[in-house]
Length: 407
Image (tube, rainbow, N blue to C red; front, side):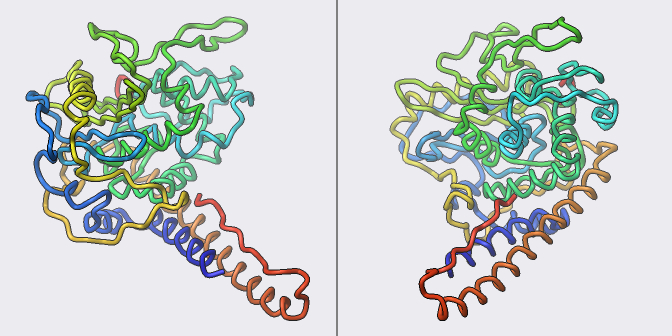
């Protein structure tokens, strides 16, 4: 009974964090070292390994073993930066299992009303019926913000989806992340980190659908009637586009770009039975730099990195038994979002933030109600057990805590 109560409080605390004002959420994450103290230190963190690529211009990066969760090397792992469409990994972590992939949905004008101008689009049209699988292909292959908004509407709206994404981030212990919109488009205060993006990828790759979608190179997409058109994955290491070679063993995961955020990318590859994750955020140069630096770090991880001693770890989700990380002071290298380059002003941010907070508050209220109900039920069961021993001990249940510009 005590274990159930402890987990219930943890779920409520996670929802509370999702409902916190932006400044409070920043303060909480700034005083917590997730994954180990070394990940909060400035500069490159690596132990007992050499040969790191010399021309790394990214403002933050991280290399980790996908299976063990060991962080092999990092640079500014917890630095908060605009994530662009890599945030769609968290969107998928949150919504992917909510709808059967064969479910069909006819898009309405209202479903696309809030898609930001300048977004990357897969080409969804009102009046056309799509399967959920096709919508997810639009999210993963073309980074379509139109597909994200349709799925969000199916989930109850943008505000609810933002609140659930924030709650999922807390469950994953991704405390550098603050969600303002579900698509990753530029909005003031929308931030994440190389560490958090790697958490999202690692968690997502455990799901067969997530893994299949992020590794799909091309797909046929509905154009109305019986017509289709082909869409191609924008991950250049996967497709070999724009003068790049395909990376041997690459299995995903997600790229992102906005004019304010620059380029971000999380990639995963398997060689010799070992799977590595690399996240690269905001390299100085545009174009292929984010992919080239990701490939260089993957190469290092599969060679010299095999002898590296871990400098940290990717923590497990709270809902899957992960230990909650105790607060600890960090150094100034963990940057706050305020004034950080790459965080755009975004006209819709205030609406999404207010709606997300309201949605999180609603989820929090439901969580508190559930805890009180369980406690009352537990008290009744405790008295009843003395009278009806044949019924045994009652067991509580814990609810689930629940682009040209934006590619």
